[in-house]
Image (cartoon, rainbow, N blue to C red; front, top):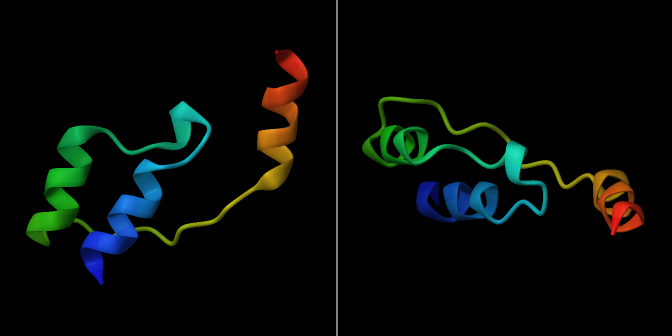
Length: 51
């Protein structure tokens, strides 16, 4: 399950909410806790307005 949770974090539409690669490695190695994935559609809508 950890790999799927980390993958979801990496697919966030907003780039500054995606984890760094060093954070990804730490999460996969089990040295860092995987934060809960929260999809915030309001941020997606704000980003679309900028385009």
